[in-house]
Length: 171
Image (cartoon, rainbow, N blue to C red; front, side, top):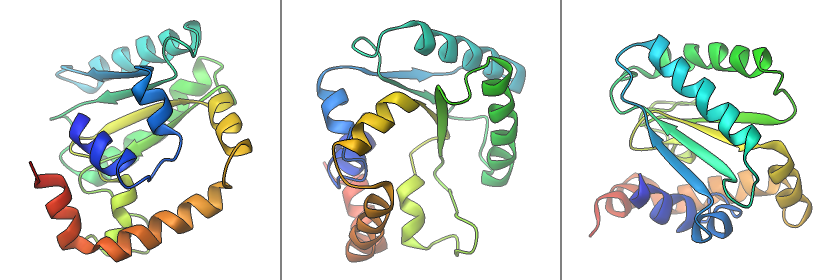
């Protein structure tokens, strides 16, 4: 996961706000060992509340990773509705949001191997828990979200599938 963060997210500048919090050690990386969805939901509850109750100077964002529970992207994608429900259940709408990442992430209307899907590819299924206030501050001080998306698509098209493979497998 760290290689992906350093090479793809920061190295390709897919998220222009990631480097600042990463180098300040404000990114919490949690690997869930839950054996079932209920256990993962318990982990999600715990991480959402920890992020809510901890200052951004200590933890700005959390990556909740489950290496084995979601080999199928469609099942993971369906699970995101449950995740949204958990956020609402905790009264955290407008406070925290989740960005999904998966090794086989596929945007609607794209082919599975379309390199633009790589904006949300990660080595393992991951729920990225983000503070909306941090997103708002970052966007206010830089490019618009639309400009970032367009730049990312252009970067990935230039890199191509072969370049992505080299980036992720390199030393």
